[in-house]
Length: 264
Image 1: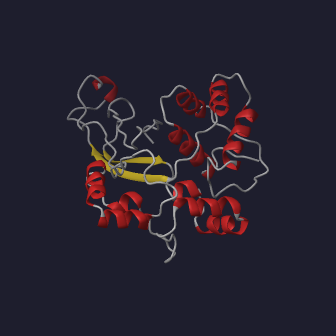
Image 2: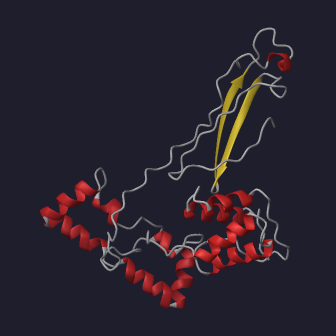
Image 3: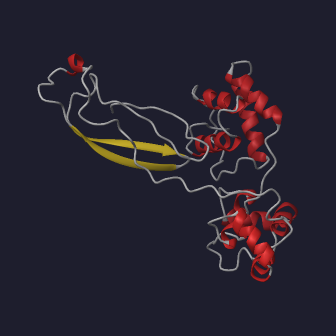
């Protein structure tokens, strides 16, 4: 292994990082691999590295340009973020309601095509396809499913069993309440060493119990919580607005599911 590093992607999921192939560690020509991991996904790329002629001692040649350009991991571009219009689609209106309006009301169609240029009505208001042929039903609203999930225990258990690791809010693309400000304040204090690890873990447990973090790997381990020091950077960045709430939540979710943070 030549180098290992950690950095955060931008808000739209894209990222880039440059590394220069020079110094004592770059003494052997050959094929090198770049491995990038984020939010449970992994991408790998390879490149060829060779020494310049008469470059016997790389320490004496550090001022020379490397024979290869800076390493750039090649990964699939992040999907484009859909445009958002506040209040649209309405929670109490079904996808079929909007399909009918798009088909029958020229003024609505004209507004939609200006507001969501390049997207179909199905992509904006419709439900995503699932492994269940009749679910979700486009004649039912998002509010209908949300009410059932929150009021019917058996329905909630069924939904969670069919779509593990995904909250009902994520599944139906429903904006969820923001994380309470006291959690953010506590994360800032923890990043500065002003509160204990156990307080931070209790905050994570609160997020899980209240469905801000939905993860499928929450069995008890009987071990004490182990929190790497670098996680404090993420907490500090979120508290100071350098990363978004979703980015912070996704990073915690990844750490839990990969047992980097162990909750007892």
